[in-house]
Length: 462
Image (tube, rainbow, N blue to C red; front, side, top):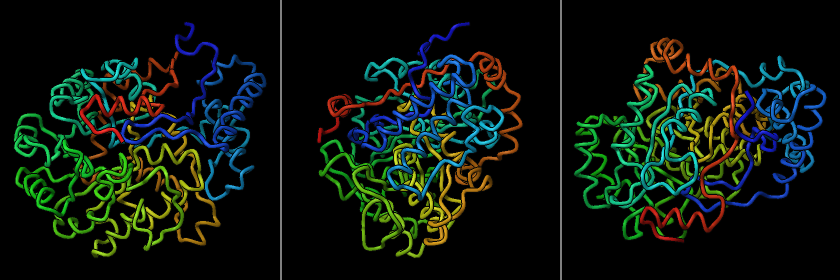
């Protein structure tokens, strides 16, 4: 069967582009990333010919992904970036066995930040249908489980309602995919009705966690977790027995309420409420700032999260979790910066408390993020200089899903036993006999699209 998507093989299987998740203004690629894409396109053509394949057939193979990642290594090396890289044998670009050795895997992949946009979506193809969601997440990627999350909006302009999230969960469950999809409950306690609505979300819809945005408010003003507004939400969560609070930190919408986007309040409430888990989405990362070694005097970005936790005496591997959604995807542009981000989070927050999230389907299928992380390595130089860990299969497996099993109280062995034998797995196996990934992204790619996204959900343009 001829492919329906990109028949000429023009799209790269590992995507470097300006797409955002709608929560930050798209950032154009720098010269190194543009060079990486150019090299990847050139190497794809060369390597496809060496393998005797058409470009499309090559792109959808493991060799296609390996070829792209090796080209990214080449571009970063040219730019003098050596602190992080994709650890693949050079033969992986043309040897399927070597490619699968580096990019294949059987880890438990639990994506703790997924998105599905419903009735108020922005009209991009693919965002509004459950079947497309299932294809992107469960057929075209190795994702075993996902949590459907929410983005901030006025109540009347939700891009995803709790009813639509539950319906998507039920569609997955009809494929015997029980426990494949969990859902958040949106809790913006500075918006009338959200605090009161937490009861129904917990009791009727069975949410597994709360999602809040401290920098967002219907009047453009955010809140801190340790002020009266934030504490009321935490107390309500404890009362309802859903003690996972997923809080967006970093990726500021703009200067308005910027201070509320900084993770300075995380350690305060984590110390106050040791029985509550705080899952810090994006780990405080800011796209306009470079992440290097931990600097306790910086007070922004990932360093603000680490400082807040350590200043308040919250231990490693305690009740603060650092999540990588959009952060990892953006850092693919600069693997050396990625090495600092992942390295210092594991070092300071804990090897059991760093969580994988993709922020998809804003970025299309998350398979490219999974493949890149499977091969990602921190240089020995940075390991020795800063005490960063080596990226071992065991550590990757923790980050990919085992760590998130703790706050979500999952029994991984039981989940995998069901997942590896359910209808969804059988459908995945059949699909992969003739896969047709599209390698597209859905989120806003320009400032104009970003502002339209904000307006659609009642936010304040920046």
